[in-house]
Amino acid sequence: MLSFSRRMLLRGGAAVLALLLVVLGLRIYDVQRGPPLGPWHTFVPEELPRAAIDAADWPVYLAAEDAILRTVRTEVTDQLERADRVRANRYYAGSPVNPMRFAQDWNRSFVLEPAGPVRGAAVFLHGLTDAPFSLRHLAEAYRARGFAAVAIRMPGHGTVPAGLISAAWEDWMAATRLAVREARRRTGPNAPLHLVGYSNGGALALMHALDAIDDPALPRADRIVLLSPMVGVTAFARFAGIAALPALLPRFAKTAWLDLQPEFNPFKYNSFPVNAARQTHRLTAALQARLDRLAAAGRLGGLPPVLTFQSVVDATVSTPAVLSHLYARLPANGSEIVLFDLNRNTRFGPLFGATDASVAALERLLPPAPRAFAVTLLANAAPTTVETVARRVAADATEEDVAPLGLAWPRDIFSLSHVALPFPPRDGLYGAEPDPVENFGVRLGAIAIRGERGVLAVGLESLSRVTSNPFFPYLIGRVTEGLPGVAQP
Image 1 (cartoon, rainbow, N blue to C red):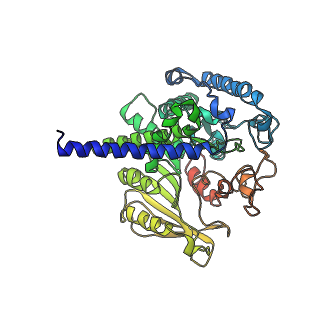
Image 2: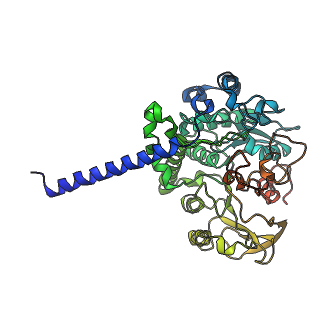
Image 3: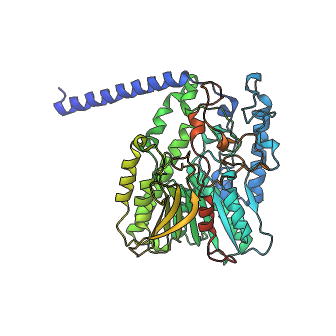
């Protein structure tokens, strides 16, 4: 006879298994109703192995990158069925959004060299599903101030979405180390070295800085700049791998994807594989564990100053995690976080829903002043105006300084988004007022989402997120202040 506790354990296990089967059954049903997989979902380019990246120099990596993009052309672009040869498909050679049509393919790694003497180097690390394109404006600002700007394409990115099916965050760390080696090669050991990370790239920048505390052989950064950093993600990412279990059977290959969308963006994937979510959890878990360990050992004093730009509301990464897991542990080293508030002048007040609660929770997460780090909040000067001010409390201070910005909220925007921060309104692809000189085949930030359903080739939700930052002049001024040869603003 089985004991009562063992019978209950078996029943509990059976119930969990039954629930799992139901969930997977619903998952299969839901995914099978969606669009079919395209060749960009099934062809997985062969990237340099992790050990090869660690042994490579910059020319070797660029040569491998070039070979990968050639295989995408031969195995995907040249093999498209007639139904896939449409203008909204970046992999169709005749599409206006095909990256090969542009003067520069910003999916590739690049280096921007200053016109005069090299005063320092900055490494730029892009986000998940993204490409080096997303940090080109910041890279150009660094180059204009005498820095060599090194932006690397992360393995699995800039090619086809299927590249992320087999990618691992450890591969991205190897690419980060390569980019830092190249930056140091161009400047020597004594020039300033900055790490600039956006979203997933922010986590990679922090991990490299923490690795450098443990490993003296790694070059140490003098400053870290983070935009919408991925310090924490949703709890779903932890269990995302379960959603892909049916993909072990070829018939259910589509369950390896959380989202299947038309690929109309020349420099970012719209489709999202399960493995990408799983890697975000693995990376943030490793990052938080490393922060905990070094904080407990009293060794975070080896971190350089960290300047972070973060929207108070962010549907992709956890804003509270940036404060509780990162800033709460930072030493008094000149770090600062800049928060972009909601547009309190909008008439959406009753429709904001849970955001008011999230903002209140954010305020609770901020320790009372004085703090070891500075906090700046970009907010409406008053609820009745769209004009904005910077409300700043310096490190080790309690008094708030309020300074007008000379910038205003656009009346049709109620908040920034995760994807908006690194793009000025004049960006040719994402800008609300795109530069007419730049033509990337589509102007995603200038599309007015008003019209009849069923007209566009993509869902309205994918185009409704704000994609450029009306406060970019303030952001770029804060990033570049104090750089060699530049007067303090």
